[in-house]
Image (tube, rainbow over all chains, first blue to last red):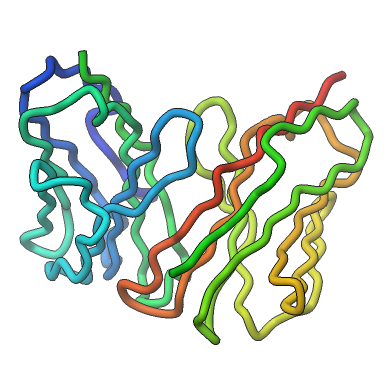
Length: 114
Length: 116
């Protein structure tokens, strides 16, 4: 497609459930980022992939969060044993270069943990 | 560490007024990029501008203009003759040059309400 696609658009999870959020970047984009946006806040960096290599995961809030991009295209963010504080919008962004030129965000997945 | 401060949290103006959104940043990098994004109620992040640290020229795009002042580490955004459709949350963001350093650090955002 023409843009960054994220699915599902909305996800409601019971506390303790595992969830998987998907990001389809623009074809050929080298860089892929995940961000977490809590209500009323700016997005905060979670992790960065350059092709299939996860080069920075310093923003992942706990070891319950795991991300992968095995073939250098689609990426999945997995959250195990969800907690209420995980409720947020999860944004994916991709860029065709290493210098964030052409940085494009997806519409996000809104996760609500009940 | 990089930091972006948007001291204004909410601004309300009447249509056709001019409004300036302030952004102050901190970084130790010599090469960096500054961004502004708009987030309307629908939630998507709309890209407005990307400016590198070596280009201090002010930029104008229609009713939008940006003032980059390295001396005060500021990158302010002005909307001239505001319209109701400008109502949104506006984020200023900062990044380093390449690779993992190109991740964005966002400010907390400014909620702009434009009243008819």
